[in-house]
Image 1 (cartoon, rainbow, N blue to C red):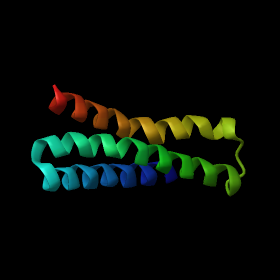
Image 2 (image 1 turned 90 degrees about the horizontal axis):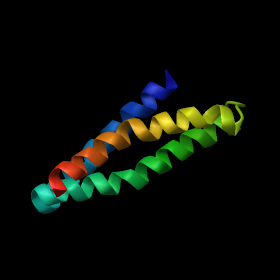
Image 3 (image 1 turned 180 degrees about the vertical axis):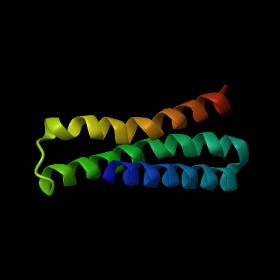
Image 4 (image 1 turned 30 degrees about the vertical axis):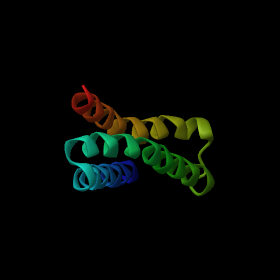
Length: 87
């Protein structure tokens, strides 16, 4: 359940980045917003992993699959958005 909440927050952050990019620079800004989202997504996934290790008591190897899920699930649409607009 926790992973689903983190994914939902990541997609909200993705939407906020796209909206900010759109407001700042139109469709080119959407591509920029998608790129800006990627390092933010790594940070969110890293914080999630940190709390899983420190507070949840899991090992880093146990948390690694969740890190990848939390990062890649929203990052793939971000890269595809950038690629589609940037062509």
